[in-house]
Picture (cartoon, one colour):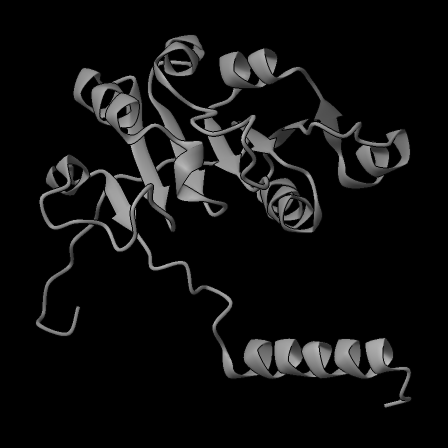
Amino acid sequence: MRSGGWLQLPGMTLRGKTLGVIGVGSIGRGIVKRGVAVGMSILGYDVMPIPDAVQGELGIESVSFEELLQQSDFIALSCNLTRENHHLLSHHQFELMKPGVRLVNVARGPLIDETALVAGLESGKVAGVALDVFEMEPLAMESPLRQFDQCIFGTHNGSHTREAVLRVNEMAINNLLTGLGVEG
């Protein structure tokens, strides 16, 4: 626009699409709320049962991991990284996903096997991916992920605002004072 152009890229309507959220803690619930706001159907999977009240309040359907992979147009990872879920999404899981699935990882890089992700991108199974985290950080210049235009990369600092840093600092000080038995 600044240079006088009027580029119009084809987009995709999110209304009516299915968003699968893996990890329905505080960050996952925030993702759910945003998906609901744009008219998406929401599936959720968590290792801890998602209470019925939370499902009703958020408009989320709790499903098995496999169901989420098979039914979601978009998959957002917002879970913790543990020994048990390292490479939670690898070759087998990509095979279960819908053709043209789109992934967002705002959790931890090693949740996704990047070799399997590259294979999914090459085959077209994965239509796009937004990664805020990587198996090895920072993402190496020679990473094969860099060759795909349908990859969006971040530096895992979405909450690095002045207000967020102040809030974290205040919480840390309050925790320290509480631990020392001093009132803040």
